[in-house]
Length: 78
Image 1 (tube, rainbow, N blue to C red):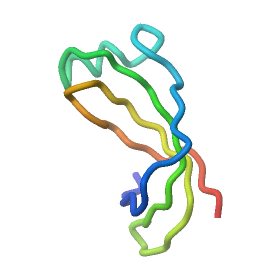
Image 2 (cartoon, helix red, strand yellow):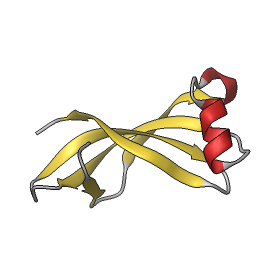
Image 3 (tube, helix red, strand yellow):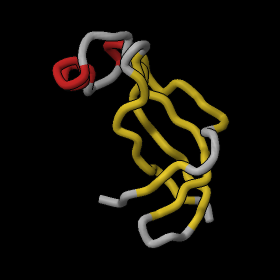
């Protein structure tokens, strides 16, 4: 598992799936609570655990009142 830190704002945010369209919605509800879950993606500059900085496409789940959960790197651009 790669540990990283988001160092800029996430830009170009797009919705990938909402509500029951998300395969993991049952697990998310069980762990974090009831909410209108959305799977989102966006691009941001990140700092990897080795100290290098790069731009990456990130995916995460989010619900109102619960916040951003399970942020993960999908693609690194540079």
